[in-house]
Image (cartoon, rainbow, N blue to C red; front, side, top):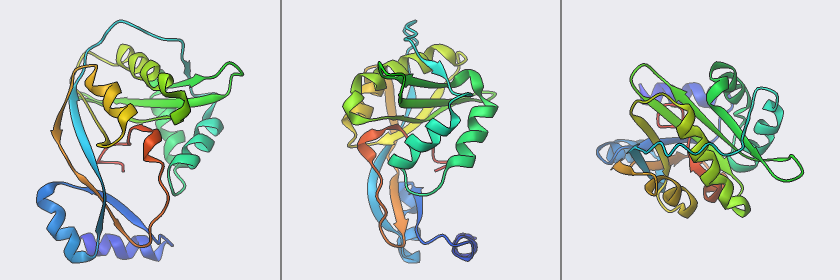
Length: 197
């Protein structure tokens, strides 16, 4: 099934494929040719502190979100982002600088029993914006378990989540098949989640 998926992606012009592999699955993906790139942490928990910093919803800023995302992640995620923002307008938030330019965004996807947070992106020079986005997202989601995934070596991400009571439950390895592509992990406060990449 994995090989058929790889073939289909390559047939559609994809030259590099990335995935998150649980520790037990790493040997399988290595046999297929994937290489490890970066460790991630899956975290659960979180405290709702009651703080709701000044943020804005994203339904009127979709093109800005898409532009910011393209500076961080390889590949075109614009249609996926637009779909998420339209599906969850109340829990898709942005933060701006003094000139009203978008410097970060965060998306939470509430489900029936669990809320997935991610992606959450802020430019590293606006580190305090990461903290504000996390607080704002946590105050807007249902009172249910929360899960997210973030780069293990991302200092902004680690601080944002551990200070709010999140606990690491798994450490998947981001793996790549194909040539390397630039990804600015220092700006990733939460990735899109294992199910969406």
